[in-house]
Image 1 (cartoon, rainbow, N blue to C red):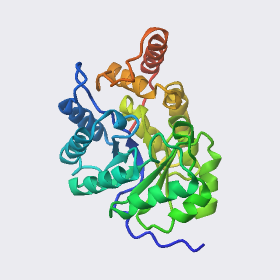
Image 2: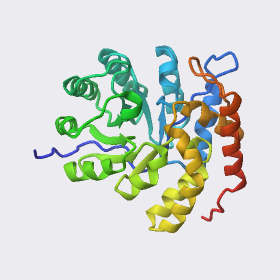
Image 3: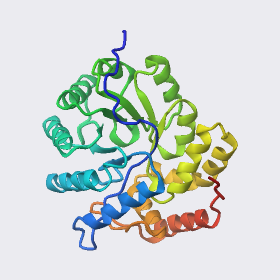
Length: 308
């Protein structure tokens, strides 16, 4: 089919977009002050955009009022400095539509839309869900494809249909197979802006055409994340590869089921946040905690020397 011209790319869709954490108090109430500090620190470090209330932001552990509070906070706190996108991770299409409309009223720059949670849809149902959300808002939308986590793949035929909707502009690709980036480029050219979404195939994705990286471990090590992407942007593959190889043991954590706890532990060890997570998640304990702690300590001890 002939792809329509994308008419709204108001977000600068490139660079490092951390999937920011949501902070909680020891009693597990929402810590808006702590969340604001995390957001401001990332912006001060130089990130190019931010995704709030994604998987790392524990979207589905917050109630509707809390989600709106975090969106409002982010827009007021850092939304005038970088584009802020919110994850849309709801259980029904109707609630996802309402959420998207609320995000637009709050003033966010865009949305990262997930399939409806829990239910595994057919392709027709997936198209209907994404279409309904996109048509309910004028905000630009990044689709989030993560087959291992959400048990559904946004296939090329699904994207063929969704390409008809002008404000669906980007794809966060978290399939563990980097061949997907080439398949998307071959099928759609530049119709969709591609983002790497799985930390331990991020460099491969960007080499193969992704313009940006939605990153979990950037919460703990923003300087190295930014330096790796900056090196790649100027064709310095040797530096990018050196940083990536140093980073890789931690980047593998992003592909594990306890990625949120691991990222928050690393973030805490770097003095950037706290470990508190809401059940059913629990902070890491025992051998797993020792393993991740050791990995972070090793990363700290061997941090690459960065030059601006």
